[in-house]
Amino acid sequence: MSQQAPWWTSAVVYQVYPRSFQDSDGDGIGDLGGVLRRLDHLSDLGVDVLWLSPVYPSPQADNGYDISDYQGIDPLFGTFEQFDELVAELHRRGMRLVMDLVVNHTSDEHPWFQESRSSRSAAKRHWYWWRPPRQGMTAGHPGAEPTNWQSFFSGPTWELDPATGEYYLHLFGRTQPDLNWENPEVRQAIYAMMRWWLDRGVDGFRMDVIDMISKDVGPDGVLHDGPQIAGTALGDGSASYLCGPRIHEFLQEMHREVFAGRDAALLTVGEMPGVTVEQARLFTDPARAEVDMVFQFEHVALDMVGDKWHPKPLRLTDLKASFGRWQAGLADVGWNSLYWDNHDQPRAVSRFGDDSPAYRRDSATCLATLLHLHRGTPYVYQGEEIGMANYPFTNIQQFRDVESINHFAAATAAGEDPATVLSAMRRMSRDNARTPVQWDDSPSAGFTSGKPWLPVNPDSVQWNVAAQRADDGSVLAHYRRLIALRHANDVVALGDFTMLLHDHEEVYAFTRCRDGATLLVVCNLSRTPYPLPDLLPPAVDAELVLGNLPDAGPTLRPWEARVLRLP
Ligand code: NOJ
Image 1 (cartoon, protein in one colour):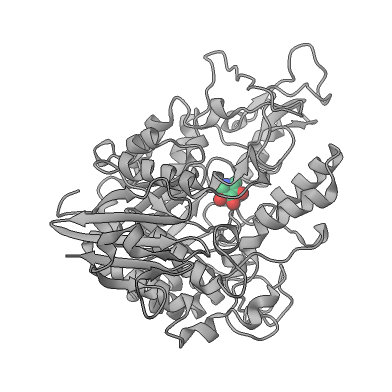
Image 2 (spheres, rainbow, N blue to C red):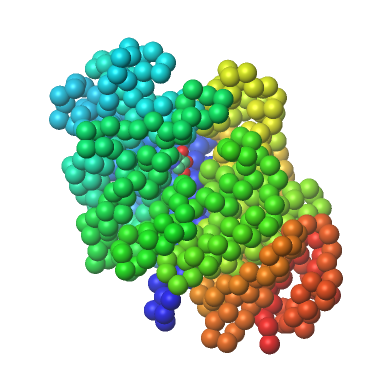
């Protein structure tokens, strides 16, 4: 990448999940007033972009990822006045606002779907995927669904609408019908809506499951069954909807219709489950004009057997193989996002670090150093910057997430042991990411004056922003330094990446090089101390640029991370 590298190569994005960030009206749910109140926290951290999870009108079946009006603000979150103030306040502080764009599906309460379901001849019937029951089967009977696909939120991807006797497709929840992107009217309506937000001042979009918008449909409208998933009657339909045949055509059209002429100032990121490095190169090659970067999932699937509900420990060599392949694959063309945490992932310090009292701070800062020193744009998810950990869930009533609740019902109905199902959920449920941000040590952690919609983690007494703000040794202070380092040092932003110690199961090391300058990064992801002279001799005399523990000596201590400048 040349001298005129895009601005987002040295930027850091901060994700706000508004429901859990800060409440300003005492209803126990975070809102725009709360985001406005906490903007200083973002400026102090030094981030460049705020990605705002959905605030559009929504029945909230999937916490806003089920939109019923693309051009409004849900009163739960506030008003357009507050939204406009947020844009202005961010811009005044030199930050940008990226909206969540959820256009693979709408809510079933969206007027488009209401019209679509009203009759088989409705004007918008073909804005969604309607299909008759499987040939020879009676509507409503198990197995009569048009395909055998399993939904991401358990059960089949098809729901029968009794009024018209046909099924509609929903890859996610049954109240999240998939839009039919084959229909040019749908695409034009979405592009118009996107232009409208850009004209209002937003600086880009994070595009929800955007690699699912093109379905592999035959000329006769046929959709194909997928291979059966062991232990169920359902199949894996992903070959029919991940990176489907027209995906590049649709994204190029979107670019022409929405971004062309103003793309240099914007950030466009495609969330793409299942995307491969080879596909990501195509999506993010600037010459192809699709999106700036992808959000890929390979590294967050390495600690699973089959699916997230069957977790296993991460092997560091698997992480190195995956990250190494992504770094190499996007070295000359394209760009990647870097993340551990987001609103769909359990907390990284509990998942990949060591959240015991002795190592929580050190492992949180070690993981952060490892990630932020890669090539790509780092994303910080709210609370990650203070080392927030998983919640100690003990029973099913404590969960709010539709994916988790549906999974518990389906798995226990299929005969799995409830205690085992719950234990996997405690580790992997998305609700771990969604407990309120811990601002201080008060009973509701400064999040709300009311009753929080999801309980505050009891560890907020010790782990909170107020306690870390003035502490130079805190996780928060370390994140500040990492972000500042990316801004100041273009080796971090743009340097070439070389993985070292490929076969080591506890130490992760790599170099970044640019214009004759080399940074060596070494991170101990274990409790075992390692003498550096044996492990990485060049590290011994190198100058320390940034470390996560004081008094660096010849031994790399448990969870110690160092960024070193080689002579
Ligand atoms: C991905 C989003 O990140 C997740 O939260 C949501 O449930 C699904 N897409 C469906 O919109």
